[in-house]
Amino acid sequence: MFKHILVPADGSDLSKATARRAVSFAKEAGARITAFFAKPEYPVSYYGEGALIDPTTPEKFDEFAEQQAQQVLDFVVDLGKEAGVPVEKLSLTSDIPYEAIIDAATQAGCDLIFMASHGRRGISALLLGSETHKVLTHSTIPVLVYR
Image (cartoon, rainbow, N blue to C red; front, top):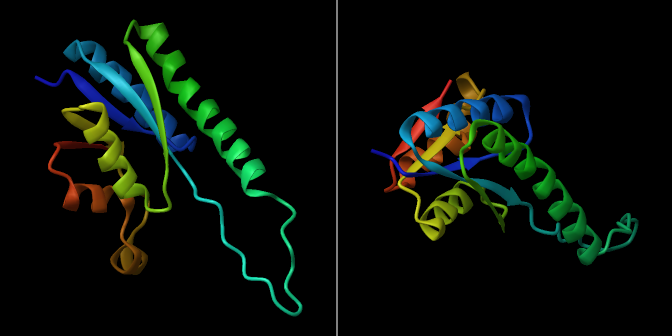
């Protein structure tokens, strides 16, 4: 049924467990995977009297973010190689991860987003919401939530 699955990854233990299950699911379905990482945007600092100056330049920040993205995505690629599942990598820069996930799935032509449930509970979940909940709310592409 599903032939191209987007697997958002952030390098956390939950994300790694989800990637393992997504690869297994893709193998069973005969699907391919696009592993996705949302790189953060460079934080804008306001300088004023008494402010600390961050010595990291935007270029250096981008370089670190790209290294992190490749490390996280390579984990999913390696899982795919072991299982015989084709995995492509994609990363976009955004401080709004749920929008980046939906944009990545659309851009890659995915027919399913396979993502982890979020660990927030109680009031913090109500106030802040989770990226998974936001993807579920805004995506027109089916979403499979792994717990």
